Image 1 (tube, rainbow, N blue to C red):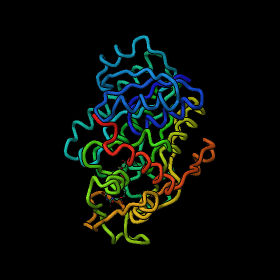
Image 2: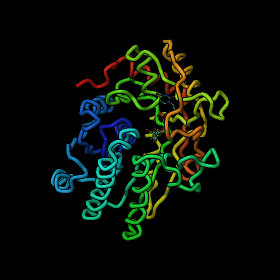
Image 3: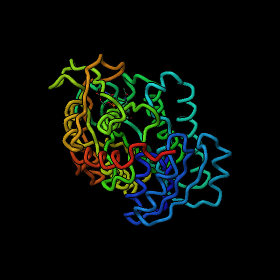
Length: 337
Ligand code: UD1
């Protein structure tokens, strides 16, 4: 297939581009570089020895995007583009709704104009809110207990895609609900390069280990979990990338929704210890009060994806830490300017 990757210069997009190219697909990257770098795409070109057409455009701008994609051929789309910082979304809700919703609307219209009828969408386990039953499967109610505009945009985009498919029955769409993506390509050439202070646990730990930050703040240790810290399902970004390819290769008219997770829960302290072991560096931490909106435990039941996509995770948290350390230690300032 020839796949358009919106937001393809970002963390998950670059790893997915690499796996697609290795499986013999072609990719085109569209990105506005608001939180990503062209250097990341150049590194995927080096790792795969393939050229990647790179289009700079703001997907939320329909005229700019239509013009930028003129003459560019693709037969399917993986839609990663969007803003993703929870705290920022609370402070800037209109920006989050505008960027994340408009870009999906523009994309769906352009796909229909051009007859491109295969779409994989980056959704999030955040749509489950604080589920009653963990591990959580796709039948669990979504959109209840979502605590922030970022999470709402994921939920709303899922609904927009379902409605678009109802009106356009040829469309095949797969909604992938990611759990917590971590790790990097084992080469250490590409990885997660957060803007400013990392919001998420793993990049923060990595920056403490490399000496960029003094210590980790552990958000609460009185949750009803084995060690009192929050439990999440950390999924290696290479496993996640393979999940996208599996979804794309099986896409058919209709909408399917899958959890992409490992099914294994790890606590914040498990993650600290795993990173210390992988890096050989200490990760000092201090327990602080819980972060607003956090849940005690969120772990995937990935059985549906295991069965229907014939996909499962094969990499451990320890491996994710080793690969993340390879990236962080070789690129302490990420991709640079
Ligand atoms: C967060 C978002 C979620 C989003 C996901 C992917 C929130 C409430 N949720 O998930 O909507 O889809 O990222 O980007 O932000 N932790 C610390 N110290 C830190 C950072 C995190 O103790 O400095 C803890 C958290 O309390 C949590 C775990 O580490 O228990 C994972 O946190 P994080 O990496 O931010 O992911 P989520 O909160 O699960």
